[in-house]
Image (cartoon, rainbow, N blue to C red; front, side):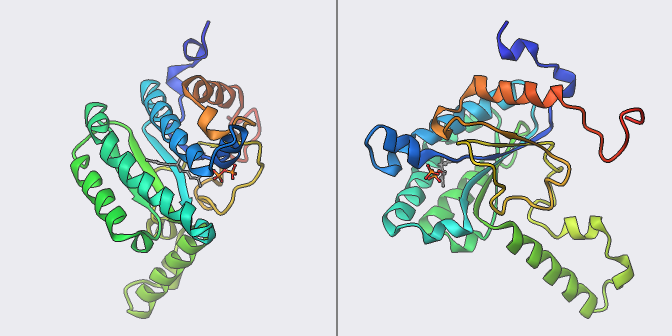
Length: 245
Ligand code: FPP
């Protein structure tokens, strides 16, 4: 029996977050430049999003480019930005066919204008789609997002629109980029690294963490199903005892 058949469709995580890592090492294994890995990483994105949709996942959020990634060699940064533009324009037809709604979180103002234009236009085109929501975290830093939330709230208090006593977890969450998304129940990181790397720190408070040694370009449909199966084998307690859940 394949992994997909073993999945309990009534207990699929509604939101999966992914740290796509290992593109550079994958390319190196073939004696190629790092961007070769990023190109092949796009194939994994396509397959994994389709696989997630097939089992009923409602939201998938992909760590595409961190704020720290701006510090990579200029050539690589340019190549990734170009890749984003070309991948978005190539994949738009498929996204429409699959009813995928594209979204983005992060400091998008940092993006080169062409890249931002392509992203915005793809988001507009897919805005009426009602299938899986694919969110790209680009120029994203969780600490920056949290800091920004604190700033927004401070401003509301300063303007007399909010009392400090009324600052709840919900108010805080409403001021994050992810205000339209439920918290992920499952976080996947590829490439054998056991780190969170400034990703969705608030949102993953109760997420199950899944680490795999596979490099991102090798992580495909069956690998996603395997991760979901692993998730389903675990018991989620939210701080309660086994007897309470
Ligand atoms: C991490 O591998 C990967 C990235 C920083 C870029 C990921 C981007 C893509 C897969 C393209 C996405 C495109 C769309 C349309 C979503 P790494 O370079 O850190 O690899 P390493 O750890 O082996 O060096």
